[in-house]
Length: 383
Image 1 (cartoon, one colour):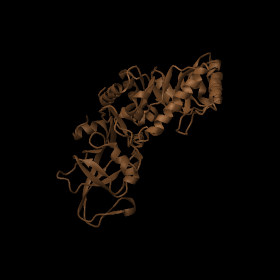
Image 2: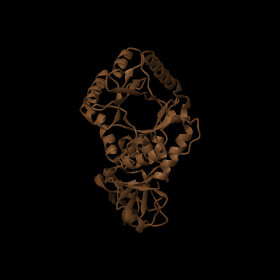
Image 3: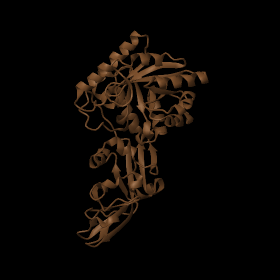
C-alpha cells in the first residue's frame, strides 16, 4: 500500500489519486466464491468503469480469478473491453439503442431483451451478419424498471421473441429490489414469479442455459436462489450494500479503492479571517489552514464543505469554507505534528470507509466510488 513518504508520493501523483488494490479485489472474489453455491458461476459487474475503479484492469483481474463473464451497462463499455482483448462472455444489463445492434452482434455482446421489438431488431441484424445473437430475457418481477411482465400476459410475446431466426435464448434474469433490506417476503415473491415464468416458458419449449437473479445482497442472503449464475457488484469492491442485514455466510471484504490527496500549502491566519468562496467560514482563533489539492471537479462533493473531515497524519481534520473546484482547505490547528507540503491526505479507503462520505451526503457507497473524477489518477497495486 501507499506510504506517507513525500518523495515517493511526488513520483506517483501530483494532486490526488486513487490506489486500486488488485490483491484486495482477488481476495474479495475468493470470499464471494466461498459464499456462492458450488456449480454456480459468478458474473462480475464492471459497468460504470467498474464502479469508478477502472474497467479494464478490474476485468482482467477478475477473469484471471475465475469470473464466468462480465456485466456492462452500455455497448460502448463492452466494445472497449473487446478492443483490449477481453474475450469472455459479456452482457449488457439494460438498454441498448437499436442503432448499436450492429456492434452488439459484431462483438458478441449478449443483449438484454424485454420486448419483442428489441428481439426482432436483433434477429434482423444477426441474420444480416450471418451470426447468432445470444440474448438474456429480462423479467420484471417487482423492480418496475424494464422487463417482460410475469403475470402471464406477455408469455406468448417472450416465446415469439425467443423463436426468431439468429436468436439464441441463452439466459433469463431479473433483479431483486429489496434483497438488501429486511423485506424478505418481497424478495421471495420476486423469486417465485421468476421461477413460475421460467416454468411456463419451459412448457412452451423455451429453455435457458443460464438463469440468474441474485445481486450482491442476494448472493450473501439467499443461497437457495443462486441458480446457474449470480451477479456480483459492490461486494467485489470491498463494500457492502448499504443497510444490508447480516449475511447468512461469513464474508470478509477488503476495500479495493483508496482515495488520497496531497497537502499543497500550509499557513496560519489570525482570528477573524474568512476562508474560501462566499466567506462562510470565519476563524474564531488563530488557525492553521492546510490547503489540499482536491476539489469538487475531482469528485469531492461541495456538499461536504464546512464540516466533513479529511484524514491527515491519522487524525480527522474538518474542511473549512466551501470546497473549490480544484482545492479545499482544512483546519489542522489541533494536530500534534505540523503538516508539510506533500503530506498524504486520506479521503476514504482502508483508513476510513467510503460509507462515511455516503452517510454525510445522504447517498450510497456506489455513488461515492463512481463519482471519483476521471482526472484523478488510478494507480494499480498488487495483482
